[in-house]
Image (cartoon, rainbow, N blue to C red; front, side, top):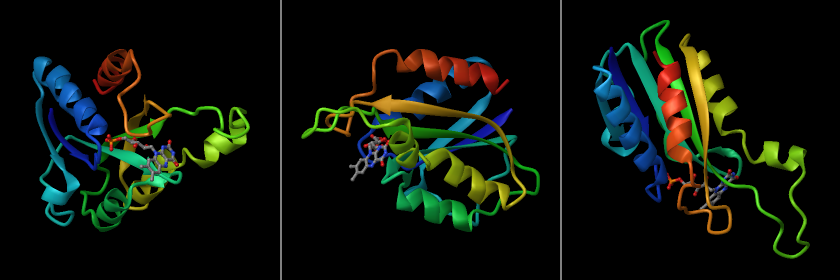
Length: 159
Ligand SMILES: Cc1cc2nc3c(=O)[nH]c(=O)nc-3n(C[C@H](O)[C@H](O)[C@H](O)COP(=O)(O)O)c2cc1C
């Protein structure tokens, strides 16, 4: 199948994830391109059997560049897509030492549902999604140990 991946990585973690995913899918015989959204035109997206969008999180949402890209994206009706959100791993509060509650964690992890909402409005159909975590103390990385296994399981779900 032909797969087009769009990412909006700022610190390089998401880019590492999609590069690894490209390798896995290519090894299975798929034709895979990936690029940063800043190098792509949302109204001129090539046709593909599957689109994959990967975005870092900012205050719970997909980074602005990806939100704007998805709002403008022109996809064929019924296009299939998969999503990857990269998140800072939840860590204890620096002052109180307390871990965030489940509710607080959810508030800062709305990246996937927001991307999904933007794409579903266009009649696109989700096939899979994945959350990948980076070190929560730095918020900039590196990716948490074992991330490759999660990406491998995700690749397997893409068929
Ligand atoms: C200003 C700022 C705000 C952030 N806000 C969140 C957040 O609300 N939720 C979250 O899970 N991660 C948050 N992060 C961590 C990012 O998700 C992380 O930097 C990103 O996933 C790393 O991916 P990249 O290397 O591809 O840019 C934030 C990072 C920065 C710099």
